[in-house]
Each structure stands twice: as structure tokens, then as C-alpha cells.
Length: 94
Image 1: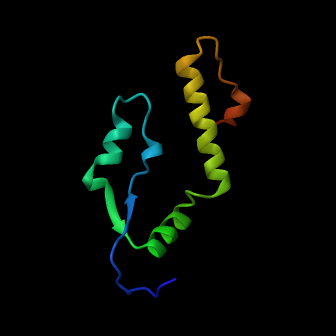
Image 2: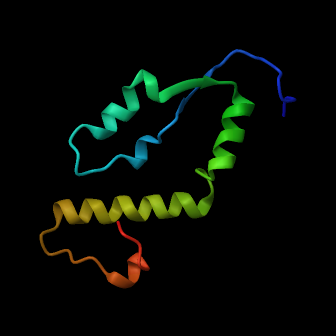
């Protein structure tokens, strides 16, 4: 890890508001977050890793929760017989 204050060129594109956090009920929201130049910043690789560690965005638990949310959203949109399981949500509002 580079010491604080050490400056290197930015090479990794980081989305300040994660693209995967887009509201699926808003058409084009994911694309807006992905391509909005005000939502991105260039970081060096160590700073990008540090940022995601601080956000806990690549931890196994967070990734698992995102996959489950995507699965439920897909079922809600594509399966007319799908009924969300309240126990799965653990009281979370998804």
C-alpha cells in the first residue's frame, strides 16, 4: 500500500454511487449511474482496493446479498407466480 499523500496516475474507474445499487423500478437508472461522468473518478489500483475495502463492497457477505437481491428482482419481473418469502427478507425492505 502506498503511503497517504503519495500521488500516482489514476488507472481504475470507480463509481461513487455503485451501479448495482440502481433502483430497478426506474428505467435507465443503471445506465445513468454507469455513464454519468459526475459519478466516476479515476483511482490508482491501491486506492481503488482501499476504497472498496472501506465500503465493504467486495466482501463475500455483500456479494451474496447482492446476488440474492438480483435473483428476487428477476423472479418478481419474470415469474407471475413468484411470491416473495418474508423469512428470506429478514425484515429487510427490498
